[in-house]
Image 1 (tube, rainbow, N blue to C red):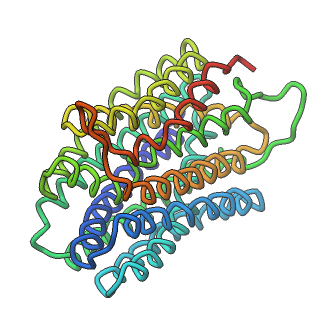
Image 2: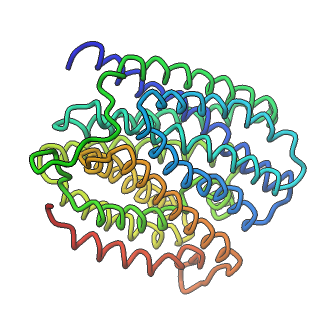
Length: 386
């Protein structure tokens, strides 16, 4: 791989690191601000989280369509990332959860433009034989940043929401600058749309089944997405905010670290087997997390994150081979975000059902995911080489 392309890919990986620090610092800060200061219900906290992913779903498709109109528009992704720096400054000015949800909509829209474009550029500029592994490294650096972002939150609690948002803003601006540099270096390799030819590169798995699995998995692992995760773990286990953030940070880190090996196997051996494995693990994750003990809650969160983070680079590799790759990658982001919205709302609505005690205490909101878990496992078992 020539030096210029390698440098561009490394800058994109760096953007995943800095951008995730910005996002992960803001997430627990907004979660506990909404729940504890604004006294919002768990359903309201879910609406805050899910307003972000709903907006991100629609803008992910928009970003893919925009990019097909001309690859120079890839720079809009970097501008959108910098726009987050202004958006997060609005959170300290809010006085109710509806206002917080409105700003989350703006954040989601901007992120839906920026991140799928970055993932597309990374996938199409990386050689096919190492695409899943490089994409996994990209997401792994995001997970390292997620861990650090949780630590930054824990150690800046005394600064208050306003002080924390200034730190977040600085990292969003830095991320946008890094993206601009990366897109400049990789510009010659970017191809948003290719002519469909019989001899052209074809996806190794059926794209429709890939999208179906992505959708079901995103519904199920929604309980690990955003503000609702911090609140659930803190309240279910009775641990304080800072400790919750740190423990969830480490859980995400180890799940991402191990997911690299799944990507390696997908590249050099079998994508099909890895899709089957991730579908099974994601399917059982909410059942484990519903059992209100520290080992089972964190194991459930870990399996959900591990499965999702393992499947993500494999799905991007598959869809990067599609002749309309920018739209396909924007599409899978949209599908996953819409599904996460559905899963998050299900969790928030079912949270009021409380618990049952049958020798062990079970959270009914997580048991509500059982039909989706069964569907995901069945779909995963049907996967075959294309």
